[in-house]
Image 1: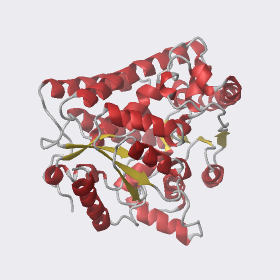
Image 2: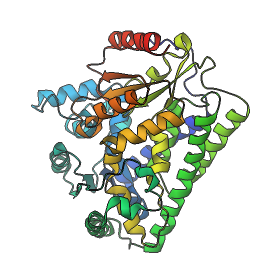
Image 3: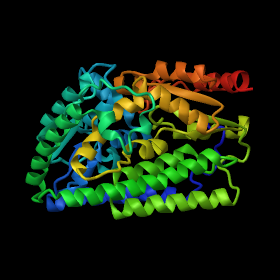
Image 4: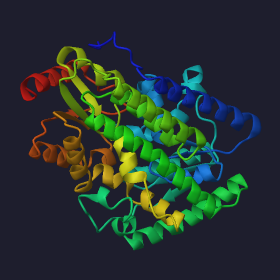
Length: 426
């Protein structure tokens, strides 16, 4: 049971607008696919969405779809069904949930009517399961699969955020960029065949500039949260506003919504409004969102004055998405794709960044998600935990999954959180 059942989950008008955008957009996409045979693609979060948007091929992001399923409490039905079909019980739930939703017919219970047949699936091969999951998904749906390589990095600067905006060629290494640019040219050819549109370099440059402007709005919000006496917006609402905007990044709607979000947060800061009136302890959430139980983030506000003020979703955009120097926009886009997961999860990238974020956000304690079966998300978790502790930030490690509610033990997590807040965050 939530400790804060009486707390209004949506304190910002922007949050409702962002949620409504996703619902109406997906309903419109389904209608266009079924009635007008409009092509769309299913793609992973770390793929070049910008090219798909530019070429007028709408996308459904695999991880977003998994989050929708989890939020609607349907993950047990799909994951149990996968296990009954012989799929490994420790298969990454986050990446395979979409495949499960296509293999298992929940009929009228399917989230938002379910996924129509796509024209293409696309993923970056960041772990061993990715190629098999997407190839089986593509085979089942009767659609082609385009795989992007994930070339390893030999340059590992801890303070990567100091290079990412202006010195991204140095950070991402020329030979890795050469490979990714070549693959993006192949992808462009595929998208031209699907959409009937021609690639326009000047249009991509303008598109990436709008993305920069969008991320600069998030940079302002991030700074307000870090410096305001109390956090003006819960991380659940940060995530809703940021990610709805990121899925549509570069569009007129996305830029307008990023500005509206910034302005609404600023108005709250100027008025002295905090998301948690009793804020005494500032927490950070390390890992993907707890999509099957986002109410968890406000559960300890009333009882302990503990407010989750930070997750990766807001600050990662300004630090990783922004690219200045767009003379070669395709190469700039390649630099964003080529090592996106690594800077979020792998040592030494992720530990150094998260420690820096903890310090700038006056974090008292960190709660770190250790997801089962998800190698990209879990690979650097212990390194991050050790780095936070070494920097003087107490951490609580929770072994659970971002979309699989079956193993979530609410009583055990509550007991661990209570001990953490009362014994370590004094």
